[in-house]
Structures are given as C-alpha cells and as structure tokens.
Amino acid sequence: MTSVKVACDRLGEDATIWGKASDTVEAASRTADGLTLGPARLGYAADARGVVDAYDGLRQKFTALLAGAAAEFDKLSTTLRDVAATYLREDEQNAHALKKLEEHL
Amino acid sequence: MAVVDSAFEDAIQGIEDGIKQFEQIWDDFVNAVNVVLPRLPAYLQPVGKKSFNTLSTKKDNVLEKLVKVYVERGSASAVRQVASDWNTEVGEKASELADTLTTTQLPSHNKWEGRAYIAYKEVVAFQSTKLGEVKTMTDGVHSALVDIANAMTTFWTGMKLAYYTFLAAMTGCAAGACTVVGLIPSIIAGAGFCAKFYDDLDELSTAFRNALETNEAKLEDLQTLKGTEGRWPPINGEALSDASVLDEDKESDWKALP
Image 1 (tube, rainbow over the protein chains, first blue to last red):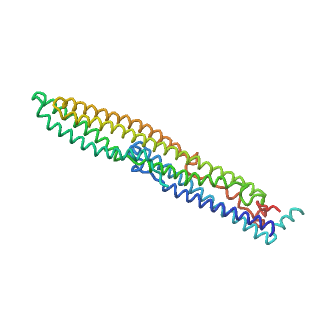
Image 2 (image 1 turned 180 degrees about the horizontal axis):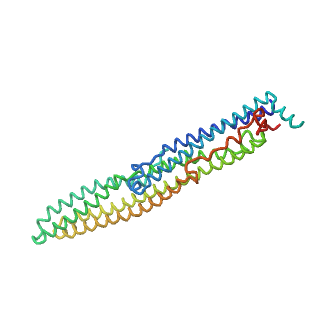
Image 3 (image 1 turned 90 degrees about the vertical axis):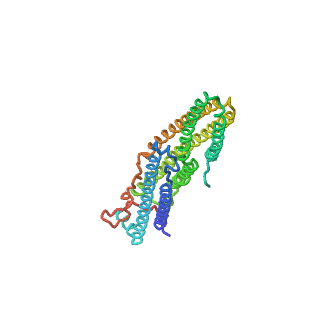
C-alpha cells in the first residue's frame, strides 16, 4: 500500500471519528432538549421567582449549541472524506507526483 | 438508576400524614369546646366563643397556606435526576470527546503536512477546547439545580419539623380544652401556636425564596454559555477543503507525508 493510500485511509478514519462525534453530540443535544423542568417539578415558588423560565431558556440554548456542534462535526467529517477521496483519486492519476516533479524543475 | 431525595420524600410524606392527623386533632378540639363551653360561667362563655372563633380563623389561614405550598411543592428528586442527567448524559459525553479528539490521537497524525493540515490541527485543538467547555457549562447547570433541590429539601424538612411541633402543641391544647379551667387558656394558646407556625412558615419561605432567587440569577448568567449564546463556533471548512492539484490554483493545501 502506498504512503498516499495510507494517509488518505487515515484521513478517512478521522472523518469517521468526527462523524461518530457528531452522532454523540447530536444525541446529547436531544437529551438536553428532553431535560425539561416545569412548575410541577421545580415547584410554583420557583416558577414565581423566574427559575422555570431561566432554566428553560438555558436548556433551549444548550440544545441549540450542541445541535450546532453536531452539524459542524458532520460538515468536518464530510470535508475530510472529500479531501481524502480527491487526493487519492488524483494520486491514482499521478497528478500529485507530476505536480511535485513540476516544482523541482 | 433513578435519583431519589429520601429526605425530601420523607418530609412530604410526613406533611401529608400530618395534615390527616390534624383533622383528628381539630375534631377533638371542636368536640371539647362544644362540650365544655356550655359549662363555663355565663359571663365567660362569650369570651370562650370569641377566642375560639379567632383560633378557628388562624387555623384556617395557616392550613390554607400550608396546603397551598404543599400542592405546589415540586419534586426535589426530579430536579436532582435532571441535574444528574446534565452531568452524565451531556457533560461527561462532551468531556470524553474532548479527551479523545486531539491531533496526536487522531489516525491522521504524522501522515500529513501542508497549509490545510495545519489549519485542521488548529480546528481539532479548538473543537476539543470547546467540548471541554461544555463540561464546565453542564457543571454550572448541575450545581444550580442541586442548589435548588437542596433548598427544596431544606424547606420541606424544616416545614415538617415546624408542622409536627405545631401538631404536638395543638394536641396538648385539644386535651387541655377538655376541662372547664383549661378551655379558654387552651384556646388562646392554640391561637398562639397557629400564629407561631404561620411565622415559621414565613421564615422558611423567605429563606427558600432567597435561595431560589440566587439560583435564578445563576441560571440567567449561565445562559450566555461562555459567550456562545447557544451558537457553536463555525469551522472554516474552506481552509481544509482544497486537496486538488487539478483545480484553478493547481495547488493542494494537503500534502501526504512520504
């Protein structure tokens, strides 16, 4: 196996890891979304003091933050996969070797 | 495993039992008044009647307040469960990712160089730091919720203690009201115990309100989520995407190491 093939495979493995990280963070986002605490659980004294609203606002922002992380990790995973595929395809066409040769001439 | 706040649940059960017990104590009190009041000297009967009306009003007021807070009590166990879930289901997951998503642990380590790979290493370091910050944020949520649950438990254990002290005092008053000489002093004492319990309830409520307000402010502060306001910083994918030598710039930002 060529060193380029190994490097591209490794980058593909990175892509898989980021894809799994995206799934993990997406699951954490869904969990955060479900961690609701209304007046029935926090109590009406807490509701009257704004605790329910403050917590709910925080929970919603946290959910969005994690969903955003999941989306970014997924994009990163796709980018890395595309990079590895492009690089390998062009290597198979000897494009990178020719480029190097060009640089040395 | 479900989180149970035993102290809170015991206090709530105690209050529920105590409310039922009080019905019997009050029935005894009323029976004693009905039996003994007519035996008082005529000039004392209006005093006894008026005192008992005052006691009855105070009793209604304090029980109404107790029942209202009891019905609207919430659940310290549920709050602790949610606090725990923030920690284990969100914070720890992010923390584990932060620990593993480092440049040297990723398979691409030592396989690449070039502008894009340098940018990628910076992305990895930044994302790992941000994931680590998620754990700090969930620690903050966990801490505020545990403080709230603690305040609920403190309130209700204090309430149970105050209520059982009140019940014991009223039991004594109901017994004292069974005698001609004891009736009026017992009614007056009962009114005093109702007022005392009302004050205790107020005092506990004030401390509880203060704790809730402190934690409401904490939750408000946490809403900035370390300045992100709920938006994950975007990754500059453009800096990573050029792997082609056949495109316009004829330059790949990624270079596989030999």
